[in-house]
Length: 229
Image (cartoon, rainbow, N blue to C red; front, side, top):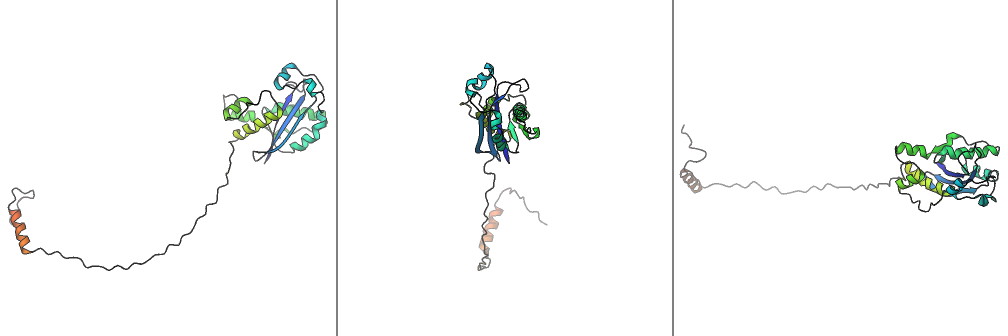
């Protein structure tokens, strides 16, 4: 099963309000394992960068001024995305900007039924807890010490690890090892034993007389005196 984990950085919160996508990062996973294939691009938004947005991701208008337009990366991006599920955190936001840019290029939008939102999954699994990417990394012990600013590829890499945990954790080595049953032939050995006759112990008359005398000398025996009949 192929899946793409992706994240975007933008000039703001509203594509319809004039904000644009400035960075996109994608991680390929097959059977919930990263393959090492990624897609990453910075995009010239052709507009100014608000200070509050730059404070989040650190991408300045000057830095982005010589980067390609979204239309220039569109074909390569769509080829990488293919037709598999797309996983993002607060996916409506990222899908909104992705589809907004695709529309501007005259391309078909990505169907929303391909979207998997890890924020929705996290709210279901951990109701009442914090569900930001940072909070989920803390919950699952994922190292984010190198994340000083938001970055699309870095955040996608962290989200890939979070996504695996949200889906139940990495199940390594589920293929059961073959159990080799060794058949051992057991032979029955018949052993012939010599049967000895029972030993007979005869009591002599002298022993009987001594026993009778001993019993007669007992005072108040527990079994009482036999009644004569």
